[in-house]
Length: 135
Image (cartoon, rainbow, N blue to C red):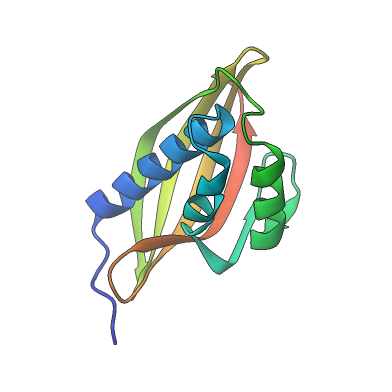
Protein backbone atom coordinates (compact mmCIF):
# COMPACT_ATOMS: atom_id res chain seq x y z
CA UNK A 1 0.00 0.00 0.00
CA UNK A 2 1.32 3.43 -0.92
CA UNK A 3 1.50 6.26 1.57
CA UNK A 4 -0.33 9.49 0.79
CA UNK A 5 1.86 12.41 -0.33
CA UNK A 6 3.37 14.44 2.48
CA UNK A 7 2.19 18.03 2.74
CA UNK A 8 4.45 20.81 3.93
CA UNK A 9 1.88 21.73 6.59
CA UNK A 10 1.84 18.17 7.98
CA UNK A 11 5.65 18.12 8.10
CA UNK A 12 5.80 21.51 9.85
CA UNK A 13 3.15 20.38 12.33
CA UNK A 14 5.14 17.21 13.10
CA UNK A 15 8.36 19.16 13.73
CA UNK A 16 6.59 21.50 16.14
CA UNK A 17 4.62 18.70 17.84
CA UNK A 18 7.73 16.60 18.48
CA UNK A 19 9.59 19.54 19.97
CA UNK A 20 6.65 20.29 22.27
CA UNK A 21 6.77 16.66 23.44
CA UNK A 22 10.52 16.86 24.00
CA UNK A 23 10.16 20.09 25.97
CA UNK A 24 7.43 18.49 28.09
CA UNK A 25 9.59 15.38 28.61
CA UNK A 26 12.63 17.33 29.81
CA UNK A 27 10.38 19.38 32.12
CA UNK A 28 8.63 16.23 33.47
CA UNK A 29 5.26 17.56 32.32
CA UNK A 30 4.78 14.10 30.78
CA UNK A 31 4.70 10.98 32.95
CA UNK A 32 7.57 8.50 32.70
CA UNK A 33 5.26 5.98 31.02
CA UNK A 34 4.87 8.39 28.07
CA UNK A 35 8.33 7.38 26.84
CA UNK A 36 6.83 4.86 24.40
CA UNK A 37 4.58 7.57 22.95
CA UNK A 38 7.60 9.81 22.43
CA UNK A 39 9.70 7.05 20.87
CA UNK A 40 6.86 6.03 18.54
CA UNK A 41 7.54 9.26 16.62
CA UNK A 42 10.82 7.74 15.36
CA UNK A 43 11.30 4.93 12.83
CA UNK A 44 13.04 1.78 14.02
CA UNK A 45 16.02 2.63 11.78
CA UNK A 46 16.21 6.24 13.04
CA UNK A 47 19.63 7.81 13.43
CA UNK A 48 20.81 11.28 14.27
CA UNK A 49 23.96 13.32 14.63
CA UNK A 50 23.58 15.86 17.41
CA UNK A 51 25.45 19.10 17.98
CA UNK A 52 28.23 17.20 19.74
CA UNK A 53 28.93 15.24 16.55
CA UNK A 54 27.91 11.89 18.07
CA UNK A 55 25.71 9.56 16.05
CA UNK A 56 22.77 7.98 17.91
CA UNK A 57 20.47 5.20 16.77
CA UNK A 58 16.98 4.67 18.17
CA UNK A 59 18.05 2.43 21.10
CA UNK A 60 20.65 5.04 22.15
CA UNK A 61 18.03 7.78 21.82
CA UNK A 62 15.66 5.74 23.99
CA UNK A 63 18.33 5.42 26.70
CA UNK A 64 19.05 9.15 26.50
CA UNK A 65 15.39 10.12 26.87
CA UNK A 66 14.86 7.61 29.70
CA UNK A 67 17.80 9.09 31.62
CA UNK A 68 16.77 12.70 30.98
CA UNK A 69 13.12 12.68 32.09
CA UNK A 70 12.75 15.92 34.07
CA UNK A 71 16.46 16.56 33.56
CA UNK A 72 16.17 20.10 32.19
CA UNK A 73 13.61 21.96 34.28
CA UNK A 74 12.65 25.28 32.78
CA UNK A 75 13.70 24.25 29.27
CA UNK A 76 11.98 26.14 26.47
CA UNK A 77 12.32 25.05 22.84
CA UNK A 78 11.37 27.31 19.94
CA UNK A 79 11.33 26.16 16.32
CA UNK A 80 11.22 28.57 13.39
CA UNK A 81 12.56 29.22 9.90
CA UNK A 82 11.00 25.93 8.79
CA UNK A 83 11.44 24.87 5.14
CA UNK A 84 9.93 21.87 3.35
CA UNK A 85 12.13 19.84 1.01
CA UNK A 86 10.29 17.38 -1.21
CA UNK A 87 12.41 14.24 -1.60
CA UNK A 88 10.55 11.28 -3.10
CA UNK A 89 7.58 9.06 -2.43
CA UNK A 90 6.81 8.82 1.26
CA UNK A 91 9.88 10.77 2.46
CA UNK A 92 10.42 14.51 2.84
CA UNK A 93 13.08 16.73 4.29
CA UNK A 94 12.45 19.54 6.75
CA UNK A 95 15.04 22.18 7.56
CA UNK A 96 14.51 24.32 10.67
CA UNK A 97 16.19 26.45 13.32
CA UNK A 98 15.82 25.41 16.95
CA UNK A 99 16.51 27.59 19.97
CA UNK A 100 16.76 26.07 23.43
CA UNK A 101 16.89 28.07 26.67
CA UNK A 102 17.10 26.96 30.29
CA UNK A 103 18.94 27.94 33.47
CA UNK A 104 22.27 26.96 31.87
CA UNK A 105 21.81 29.39 28.98
CA UNK A 106 20.77 29.38 25.35
CA UNK A 107 21.74 27.30 22.34
CA UNK A 108 20.81 27.59 18.69
CA UNK A 109 21.02 24.87 16.11
CA UNK A 110 20.18 24.39 12.46
CA UNK A 111 18.65 21.02 11.73
CA UNK A 112 17.75 18.86 8.76
CA UNK A 113 15.32 16.01 9.33
CA UNK A 114 14.02 13.26 7.08
CA UNK A 115 10.42 12.32 7.81
CA UNK A 116 8.79 9.17 6.45
CA UNK A 117 5.04 8.70 6.08
CA UNK A 118 3.50 5.42 7.22
CA UNK A 119 0.72 3.80 5.18
CA UNK A 120 -1.81 5.66 7.35
CA UNK A 121 -0.09 8.99 6.66
CA UNK A 122 1.49 9.38 10.11
CA UNK A 123 4.93 10.97 9.91
CA UNK A 124 7.90 9.32 11.63
CA UNK A 125 11.41 10.71 12.06
CA UNK A 126 13.94 8.67 10.07
CA UNK A 127 17.04 10.84 10.33
CA UNK A 128 18.16 14.09 11.95
CA UNK A 129 21.35 16.12 11.67
CA UNK A 130 21.91 19.12 13.95
CA UNK A 131 24.59 21.77 13.72
CA UNK A 132 25.30 24.26 16.51
CA UNK A 133 25.30 27.87 15.34
CA UNK A 134 25.87 31.20 17.07
CA UNK A 135 23.06 33.41 18.12
